[in-house]
Image 1: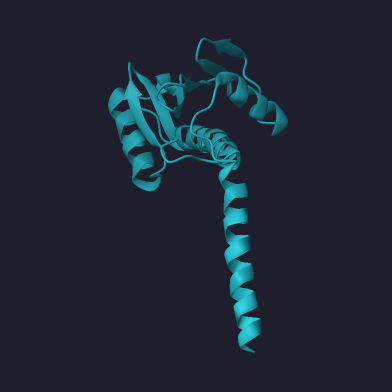
Image 2: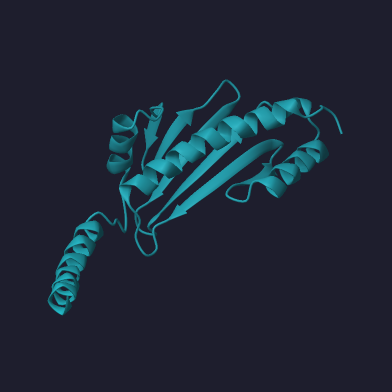
Length: 159
């Protein structure tokens, strides 16, 4: 019995570091515009309609355009969506809508800029992340933007 327990402990000691080493190989500490474009294509995430120096521009709908900034030096990804269909809402109404959204959605932030509604999400690479986390982040960005647009459109116009 003691030999069996000793054998299992030795096996555990040998296997755990190997599996940990394998998982740490897929940890990313930064990314590039090319890497994100490749992920979008491989994962069938909506393709960017335009590429700028360090960003991808997405046409989400007739009213919404999104920008995905890849900060290679600061190791983060920043997603910002601009809803331009809010012209029927007053600035006070848009501020109320943004506050209502922010009360229920802690992973994103909505606010008003120059009479347009904005939605932002960030992914920080501090400590490292996996490719799967990037894919999840991108999916959450697009889903959040769709839900955010629906939320804005469902609000009464005016003050």
